[in-house]
Length: 217
Image (cartoon, rainbow, N blue to C red; front, side):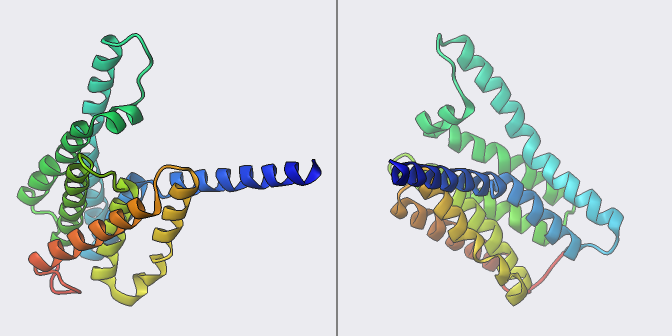
């Protein structure tokens, strides 16, 4: 009985730790951090750094957040049961695809026409491409969106900053393990997310001529 209680407590501890890691490495938190780092490297003054960081995050987050609030309100009014934002995407992959487009398309176009740094724009395009392809894949197979997006963002750092950014490499398996422990994904789904994130990002950076320091703006 004592052994069973100890095992139960240990399992509960692992679950709590997994949840903390999953929240700390949420894609939108990682995206904000990566954008700030890349913008700092791409600009000459603190004013420019702050301006492009805030502009990118504002453009990327505002439209999706407004849509989420509007959509959740519409679904709640049309249903007798409580609907969470999480369930909207789990049960309706088309909603996730639309959110991916709302996240990346308006913000990428705006950042481009405003003359934003090329490297910041590349991070945004890579994350958008990863999210769109993962959303399309989710119509037939549920790859891990969390792992795909975080892999994409960290891959951007690996391409732009080289070996110094390799210190972030353990974050991907750490996130994958946390999602696995929480029962959110199978190992195959985690691997699918990782492969998708890294392949899309490397393709975007190479296509934009930013292959391992090939240019900046």
